[in-house]
Image: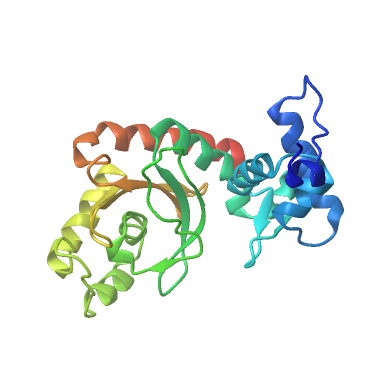
Length: 261
């Protein structure tokens, strides 16, 4: 007896079809749809099992090639522009997504890109690691600068007037390890300027640690920050300073190749 699902979504994959073949077929199906498409409908149109569609959609979303609507349906992603040499210049998050993917794979923790958005630090993009124990997605979240590693790193590039003004305000401390003392934060900023990286120990959320390094422009000004973060029991300060220096080298080399000077 053949199941209802098997009848409604017959597999069209050939015996020698690779995962890359299936992923590109699925991507072509999403682009050709001209509208958002649900997983069930993508399975029907592509001829792939729903479980295969869901798995590839997750990977393509991490790469920015597709995006998910609020109802879970699938749309073409903004990173598709990186496949078109004559198209408009892609957004920074899409340009650096390959770097985030590499870091998530090699370090085994989530990797994120963030920028100084004036009143707060804004996370532009994230790629989750394949580690079964991970931490939540931070894409599009905003946080106070002093509570997260990329925010502290950003503060190290501020002019003195802006830094003094920020440290003079009443700063939030959501966990017992949050640092809110202006004197202590100033010492941390000075240390970051020396080491080139920032580390946080459960300062925004209990059980989550983070490490951030800068992406600089051709004159040494801060363009964005790259961070990796994960559960504190696994992603601990014992990894420093080796990982900090390693992350600095990788990000400097890869970001220059991906976005240029």
